[in-house]
Amino acid sequence: MTHGWLIGFFSTFVGIGVGGVIASFFNGFKRSIGTIYAVCTGLILGLLSFEIVPEAIHLGNWVVFFLGFFVGVILFKLIHLGFHKNPIISTELRKQHHLRIGLFLALIIAIHNFPVGVVFGTSEHSQFSLVLLQALILHNIPEGMILFTPLFIAGIRYYLLFLLSITIAVPVALGAIIGEMIGQQNSLVWAFLISLTVGTIYMVTIKEILPESIKQSSNKYSFFVALIAFFLMGAYLMY
Image (cartoon, rainbow, N blue to C red):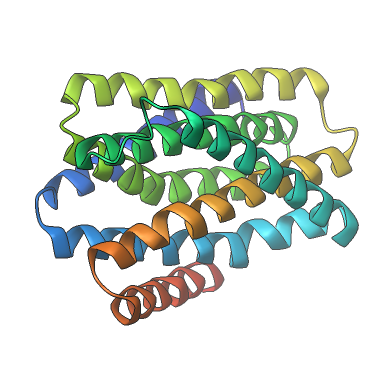
């Protein structure tokens, strides 16, 4: 595989963009928005459980996985705390509330895309890169859906969303360039970085996406839809 940084950038941009297009179709329908969040919760958790977590443990071990996961959780909490302390972003006005969620998700996605890019770059000449590329595209589609949904509600203009997609994809390219320079010497580094992204993605899903689905619909409906999406993703990845 050549030009891994460009492939990573394009895959991320396309995945986020496709998710945004899907989200735009449901913009303005409250029940549909709750469904989108519930589906994305199930898809992301399914992708983590059936694809990314097993690969992280396979590359490293349980200790490395839990350490990376813990660092990812701490990173999420620090960013989350910073956003809620900001008096401009944390206002209770409805549109600004959705804007805060969207910007917070964009920041988290951009941050966790950097180590994903590093891992993708270090594994550029291995079979694992194909698995990671598939995971990169698949998890960016639901992430694009959950990212753009609150931003559409907040009234963000489309050209700004296009620029935001590019911004989110840039860390993948930068990480892949660094990964190509690092090489494949230490699989524990890969495992730690993947585990860190798992921690951040998991916290975003549980703390931001699922609660918003429940708020837009109901507990039973959100969990039911998320569970279906979870097993559908598992079936797709396993078979």
